[in-house]
Structures are given as C-alpha cells and as structure tokens.
Length: 282
Image (cartoon, rainbow, N blue to C red; front, side):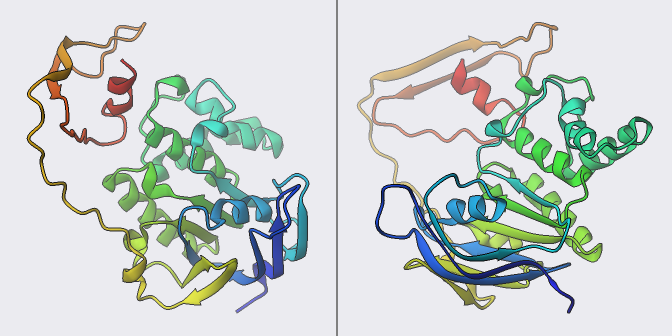
C-alpha cells in the first residue's frame, strides 16, 4: 500500500474568537494513486478542512496532526477560481508555478501545453485570462497545478463550475493520473459524476468525518422540476439584438434577443465559454 500521501490524526479546527470547533477528531488517510470524495452539507466545514490541509488557516485553534511525506506537493483548487489567478495570459498562468519550481525555461512550453490539453482548454498561450468563463478559469487553475506534478490534488466543488463535457474530461484525467501515482481529494455536493473512480467516500457531519461506502446515492442533490407559474404578463427584462464584441473584434455570439416576464424563471444553459456569464454582466 505504501505510506500515506496525506494523513490526518484527530485533526480539529476552531476559528478565532469562537468556542466551538468547526470539526474535530478527523482521521483520514490517502495513499498514492487513490481518489477520495468528501461530501457534506453547506457549512459543514469542507472548505475549511481543505484550507487546513493546505495550511491556509490563519489564527484560530488547531488540534491533532496533519502529515505529508517530505517534499510532498499538494495542489488545491478552490471553488472560486478567480481568487487564485495571478497572471494576465493563459500561458503565463500555467507557467507561474513552474517558474517558482525553477524549471528550465526551454522545458516549460511543452509542460504548459500538455497540462492545457489534459483539462481541455483550447486557448492560445497569449489569450487573456479575463476573457475566460468561470468554468474555463477553473480548468486553467487545474492545468497550472498539473504542470507542477503534484503528489496530491484537492478540488473543491468542480461540478459547480464545469459543464458536463468538462466533468467527463476531468474524470478521465483523474483516472489516468491515478495510474501515475497522483492522489486526489474531491469535495462535492453532487458526487454522482465520480462513480467508478473513487476509492473511498467520506461524509463531514456533526463535526466529524465518517467513512462511507460507494452507495452515495442518498448524498446526491437532485434538482426537482420547477412548476411553471402563470406570471404577471409584465415584462421584467427585455433583450433586443444584444451583441457583445471584445476589443480585438471577437464576439461570442450574434444578436441575442429574449424576454423574461415578472414571476417567470429562466435557465440559461451552455458549455463553459459559451457566454453565460458575459450575458449576465451585460
């Protein structure tokens, strides 16, 4: 089995100026080539646990032990990728970590392009990061970490940002990298998509982490269909032949028109990069 890549023994954390712990007594082991999934309700402490593992919690009280092998590399992708972006262009963002690892410059382009291919981000290396959608930015952060060849990669709520195609590609990437000995910890509200690749399911509940079996169906959050309302018949938002063009002349779509009435609900669907966020901003 080998030594654990990550080992938590009785770990607990309490935020500054609070008496109670967010969680305590957490015991968890992840070995090379394993993928584990952590589920739990909103506010249960999943993101706090991730930050604790990565050493990002300032202040507060920590008890127990977090152990990694010597020189072990741990990469974390938080739910909001914009908090982790550091460069202006796609290529520079992926290469940033390699620069900090003092990788020879002539070796960087191949590793950057390979990482981008792994996550399915087909963008020019000089493409501006600000133009990417949230899902594309999430892929970009993952690519930057993969280029650094981590021992453990922790992903916080990837299904919240990636479209079905992106999740399928990520699943295949996880499957391949497990064979290379890379370990994964996925924190999810909707873990159905990871079936077949996860070695252990854990639930963070009542301030403790419990090992669960693969029968995670009860943890899945299924969306119930919305019963259409009659609406008031009054238009709340009217969009007429909307076009958005960037400074270089590139546009995401042609002319967009739609109407939304008061009391109505509308779902805007599309793959990462289709322009959903740009539509809302406009």
